[in-house]
Length: 361
Image (cartoon, rainbow, N blue to C red):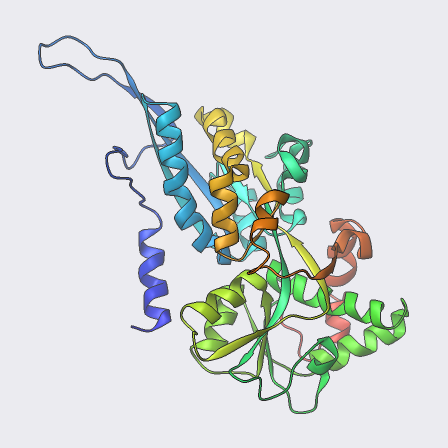
């Protein structure tokens, strides 16, 4: 069975998740109470049915597919009179944020760049102090940008500078619409600044030469992986570490290798409660519990098992074999606030458009 077919089948099942022994009531919005009756006809304890919608970025589907059953089991143990159903929506991070801003009734938003949560904050959907509601500035795990190459690394790709080689074909997500693509672009730009002692002109020259080699800009990180692995297009995929490892150990096993650059960008995956929705539905407490549990040891270990870098240091330290040390920089430290980044680099006519030949719109 091809990865594309399995991917479609997985996507069809994500909206209905169940745990053995836990009754999950479908088709509910928010919370409702139902009265159970014992066999002798007397009323038993009321049960509460809760439904949460998690709107997230595309390559997070593998994590939340496994996280949701963990959380449901935990929540049921803590709240035996409640039945909880978690629904998922995945796509390009910024498109997902726009969908929520335009009315998609998300209880929680789990994105891969701060600007997507900030958009919801500006719309009044997320509280202004959302970063302080959870540990680590509401970032339960991080990733970094690496390179996925063909088995044996025939093009001899070892670091960022090799991406400018003549005749090389690069596949990456579209920086205009996806967090994956933006981190890839900013990772290249940050490398240029690092390599050329903060010389903007030389850094731009490097990035322009790299972007000349981009063969395909895909509309999401997972779509870029499919193009590279399944369709066999390109010599190197520039993507998140967790996505590259999934390809190397699962659907692309034996076909690809991972190359770690010496210096790369840290990608942060912030989470927030969409308070305007949860207050209306009565699901605020459940939504907070759902996000709180991301910092539990089982959830943090699951992140590490899927090659996401846990924010809990003790769990990260235990998984150093699969998550090797990489010197990274935060985009906000190098380029300013996300408002500044989006306006300067990814707005129409911004730096990306200036440097990319046939920049995607």
